[in-house]
Image (cartoon, rainbow, N blue to C red; front, side, top):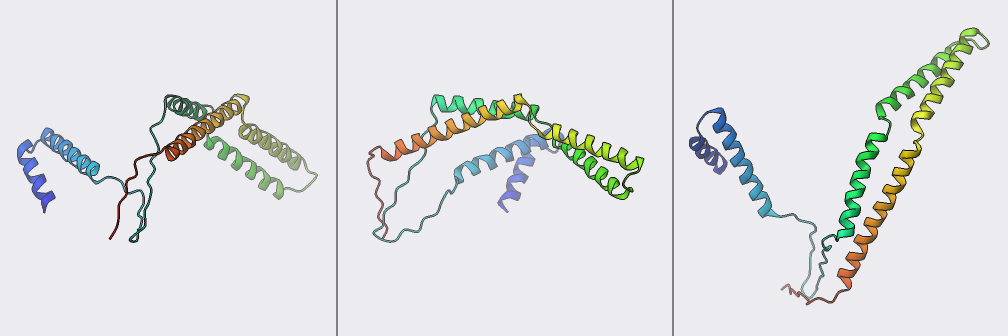
Length: 176
């Protein structure tokens, strides 16, 4: 009911034109986003009995080097997508090889058509092999990406361990 009234009031305020509909849509979207921000996100639910305590450790904000490594990793992933062979081409080559193999099975061995189809099958397998083996540039980019991802993980785990080891004023909540 509240949603209907809200839409009705906004419709009256903006009018029944296309521009009014656009303005009303934007207002409703902004209100929904504001309500979503108020709700928050539930990460975990803990059932604590009386006398038990719990500790919550949040990951600290990323440092400059971690942000730089993340940025480089995203850039490498974007470049890697451009360099990689499209899966469509690989699937087409696989279909071509399987069709050539089926045709070869149907021919009589020792005939000219069998030799021609064996040759077509070998060419298709060679093309598929060329498509699936990564280029040197792609291999280098993958290795560099792995280094950056490992660096990010190392920095995050070190920051979290540092946050856990740092003495803090305890926040104690007792449940009764």
